[in-house]
Image 1 (spheres, helix red, strand yellow):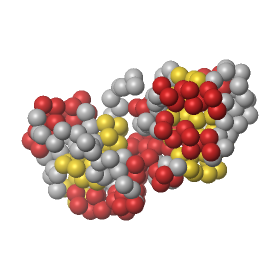
Image 2 (image 1 turned 90 degrees about the vertical axis):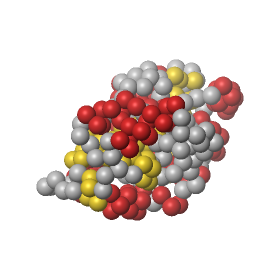
Image 3 (image 1 turned 180 degrees about the horizontal axis):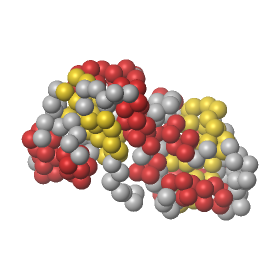
Image 4 (image 1 turned 60 degrees about the vertical axis):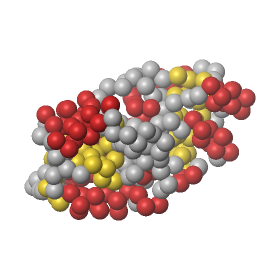
Length: 255
């Protein structure tokens, strides 16, 4: 496809429709968060709108940044000082638009974080669970992987980082539930949905006890590591289907 230029508002509407942002009650505004130049030809995608990503996007001559973790989270300090001031100043001085999509990107059936993580880990989805159907449920399509230890090794190979597994190494895996990021509070719903293994980005102290007492294995794969692939897929889709130039920039994060 020949590279094209898209109006900023047209891009916002296109993404709002594709990701169905209106149906989510989220912790932050989804869509255009910081208004930059009107004409958009090149986009940079990344997981989080940190200062390092902003700097690299500017160096790459991007017109807009698309992220999963943007700004203006519920309950945060509303004052534009410190880190927030520096980030906003950087965007505004460089006329760089910032688009952010949180829960809508988690949930999308093809481009979303959960869909893309499942594809990367060879997980075949057979159902959804939890609020807004954010959780996915299915089985691994690799018959040679039958135990928790083997699944953990497979995940570490595919994601390129260490994972934390709760459960017996030789514990047999069956139905696998997964939800990227900080979804440890969905473990109870995953158990009710019939999962014997739950994968997420993070794990909390009480979650360990729930997993042990329920006899359900839990693998914490890393928040950032599980949420790289949705925003990458979204940018690739915009490039392939709508002609924008796209560059994915992965700012390393061990958490």
